[in-house]
Amino acid sequence: MDRDEKQSGAGGVLPDALALVSEALGRLRYGAIQLTVHDGKVMQIDVTERKRLTD
Image 1 (cartoon, rainbow, N blue to C red):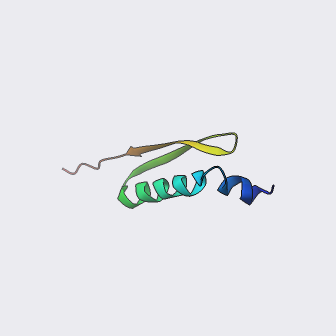
Image 2 (image 1 turned 30 degrees about the vertical axis):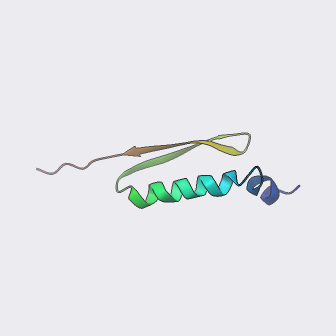
C-alpha cells in the first residue's frame, strides 16, 4: 500500500479533515489553525480566532 492509498483510506478521513480545514479557512480572518496528527492521521483540528479592536 503506497502513501496515497493509506491517506485516502479509512473511510475518507483525509478528505473530511481537508473539508474542515477549508471551512475554517473560509471563515477565519485573523488567527491560526492547528492540526494534531497521530500515526499519520489527522486527529484534531484547533481553530484560534483573533479579534482586532480599533480605537
